[in-house]
Amino acid sequence: MVFRDSLKEPKVKTEGTEHDSPVMAGLQGQVSVQPPASFKHNLRVSEDDLHLLAYMLLANKTNTKCVGQGLLDQEVHSLTFGYIRLNGKKPVIVARSGEKNYGKASDDSLLPGLNDDMALNILARSSRSDFPNLSYLNRKFRSLIGSGYLYKLRRQLGIREHWIYLACNLMPWEAFDPLREKWMRLPRIPCDDCFTCADKESLAVGTELLVFGRELSGFAIWMYSLTSNNWSRCPLMNLSRCLFGSSTLGEIAIVAGGSDKHGNVLKSAELYSSELGTWQTLPDMNVQRKLCSGFFMDGKFYVIGGMLSHTDCLTCGEEYNMGTRSWRRIENMYPGSSAGGAFHPAMRSPPLVAVINNQLYSADQATNEVKKYDKVNNSWNVVKRLPVRADSSNGWGLAFKACGNSLLVIGAGGHGSGDHRVIVLHSWKPEEGTRDGSDWSVLAVKERAGAFVYNCAVMGC
Image 1 (cartoon, rainbow, N blue to C red):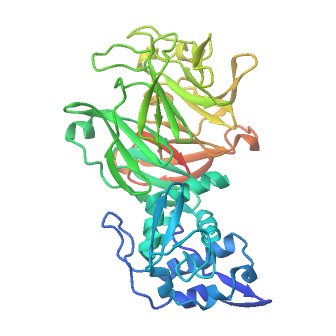
Image 2 (image 1 turned 90 degrees about the horizontal axis):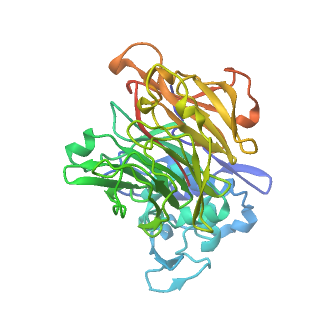
């Protein structure tokens, strides 16, 4: 499969005449900027990178009269002056003279001829796939991208792109950008061999990817930062656990239930804030459970399914109201956990669930069907067939996620075995109808990835 890695050369229309991008013309011939060693991109500022600046101006539909002739005539060297640092919530441009410019245009602004507020607004509207390339242009852009401010501004503007993060058996973590159809390999986690080989769980919160597992010294959480493209240790929960239910809502995540290091089934819950980097203990659930699943719906956090003990399955769910800090038990919210099959329910994966537009869907591990939850009647209705089989491994090795307005099913596809298997990413938008089997589209195919998805998370920012 051929992926799109670059933008076509943009054109700028000036007073009715089409010309080559003046931004491109102004940026040509500049020296390359060395990126961090962890990135494995082309180390020179390519023409695609230079076209990027012109493209972003057009993407925001900025009139060239508003941009001003200054942008078109400025020397590129003006882009390399100064640096950016965070002063509270807003970047401050510091010129070489030490003068601070708050939102006004100058030769030392991010984009010459534009005031800083307009420049930041334009940059925030570009694809986050372009952020690494922007950071190569000069120190000022690198500081801006590394500060994370653009992601905060994107949230304020309601701009969000969903990337898919996968860990399969033959590769480390990789990210997939559906808009660009582009795979990106993450740096390896600097963990010990125990963490590498042990079972892991993951979730994406804000601009962080958290991976939970065990090291020789005990439970550990490794955190990948999108802004730094590096892994670091995340603070441990107040009560470390595994086999828990979890979900994220913006910059917060909630984990509930699970098992502690002694194998005891828990009913405790905690909230993680990616902005603060801290864990907060929440009130206990009504019932302890492990191997359960969590999700946010209508602004509330839910936990469904799971095991009460090593042998007893749960069909009830629980709803957590963050306003009242209280749990409400919902009987028979997930009866599918006790459905028939060749294996005991304890052998099945946690419920495969996803929420699209505040509507809950599940992938039944026994029947290979997608089901939709009826909130009013507290029941499930069959919607369509899954594009891959979930019953072959009792739901394990299959990812069922929400990705924007689409349901995402990721699993083994094709023929062959071992190293020759491929992982196929299927997507479907529920709003487009429920024709059985005919409207799953193939989002991507990852070759030589094996036949098992160990971890998957979707990050929207």
